[in-house]
Length: 498
Image (cartoon, rainbow, N blue to C red):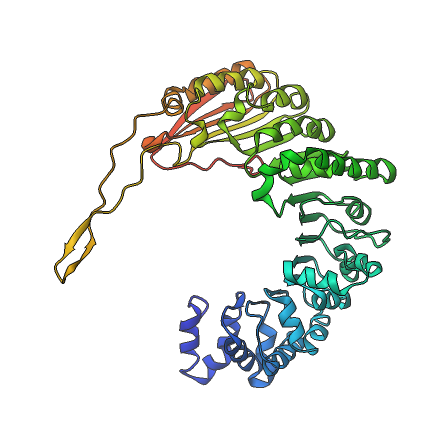
């Protein structure tokens, strides 16, 4: 039965008493997800409570998606949670609705001693109150506030009560055991005046917050290693340039707090965006900076202060447009030369050519990049150039329409008519001529410290992918190899050791 899927196991359970008794062990071996309605949750509870509850010991991972469950079903769910003595991972997608359905569910949740991973999505007041009661040795907690629920929560609170709903305060009951905390959509203007609970084992923190105040996290998470920050309104990032005074003011608030009260000794990894780290204003050393998401041109002006403060050994810019390599359009290359060359030994650049890059001369821009790279003391280099479908101006193929023999007044889709390919744009022409092998070889000559360099070019259009892989052996000999593929190529990030 261990090789069967769940429908097959359920069928086999109906064939004999032995399989009926042993089947639940295999059915519940993987995560159980309730996607449907109240009826499906009720059916699950009935199944789990059969056989004097012996099946409950096999339940280890449970996720419940529907939040609109009846009082009778919620009462049965509370019994399941109370008796699931080996449950290690629990997810409520509509936590406010589920925890409000019956008063026994929050009480049962607080008593699952085996629970190690808990995810509560769309949290509101009831969820927050329930979270305060939890005193089990959780190692992972994800708390996501629903916009409507958070608004309702704040309207129901007195101003003096607001800080008691800060995530750092809510999770105090699991402070001793928690290793990873994910907080999404928390409001920046709810203050935390004072809080002395320390999370000694917490090493990973993920925040989704447009304007985070960093002081509570520094004070309560002194041993943090990995920090991930994302903006909730990431689609509006391009409009924030007009609010630079506000952005600078928020950064200064965080910097001043760190000067007054201290900061982390160092972080191993920051994951997020340039603007997010700028707003945090961290003054500690950060070993590894990994910037995800599209970088706006004006964000390149923020990179210099960030690099001066962090002094990273590893730097990843995983989505930059081609025009950011143009010194007349962006400060990116200047920031790399002046603020990163002295400390960065591992560098990864992923260049994404889009519609706005059609008129770029990529050969010329890669030469400008080469001049900057020659100033580094690199050990490892990864460069990837990708072309998206909008770089090619050729229109999408449209289907043809043919008369429908079964309907004189109708028609049916025919074979799509291929459009006439648009002539190559300057970016495509120059990218096709770019010699990736020569570039990698020149890097080996210009940067004697480099041990490995990978240069990837995908496109243009249907040209496939070409990869130059340079390795420097212990005796100093440089080995250069090439790989070509008709498909796209995934470049390993710098933390993907091989």
